Length: 290
Image 1 (spheres, one colour):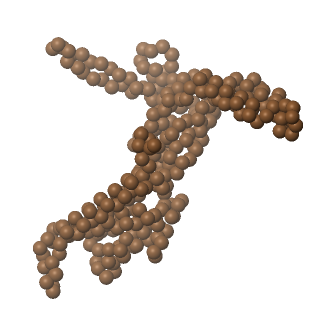
Image 2 (cartoon, rainbow, N blue to C red):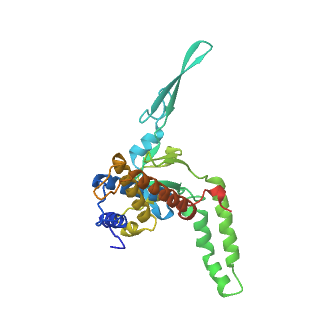
Image 3 (cartoon, rainbow, N blue to C red):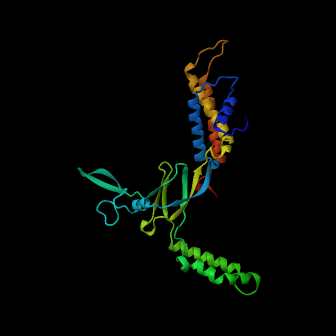
């Protein structure tokens, strides 16, 4: 099928590109499965079509708050739940001194398919709360005046409303700073550096993040214009690597196997594909934009 829509159809497509069934592809099925995983991993981590921006909602539990409130041994307040210690010994003027470091476990467990976190939306992004929220009071008292400004000469206009909202956003930015977060996709943990005494069990957090696309939910991944030639060249390189041990062996009819040449050709193809991906399909670093 020229437009593969599944993992196996993609494998069959790549094998046909290499000459199957006219030629026997000397690559084990297990090797091909590994190469498919490698291609998908690179696609998810480097290709801008390999991820999707999502907003995940998470409800805080008491365990999350307990980990966030944990304190080192001997510190006042909190417990020692989730505290990890690391010791380092340093020689100073002939004597050995040991320093002990403590690391808090103020993290949230995130799904393994999340490969990047942009931010956690502010959960106290209002000036005031409840009925005393400034935005709520402004809308409650002046919405009819705003409507009058649209329909008549009296009342407010949209410019005044926009300026007021901008001013409130500035106040919110100064009074409610954004939360510091730390994330590494190899850990599957989102560290949230906040005062955990300000949150309670059952509150929701909204996390803006990037999630890896998977072929189970999105079958068009298998027909991607990057994955098809990239996987084909990966299989070709593996084929050449497998055949290197037969270098110089002549087959009936005088045909001589040349696995090294096949391997080197595939390496050149992969280099071209990766270079094209970096210049065409990969988002540039922020300091290179502009």
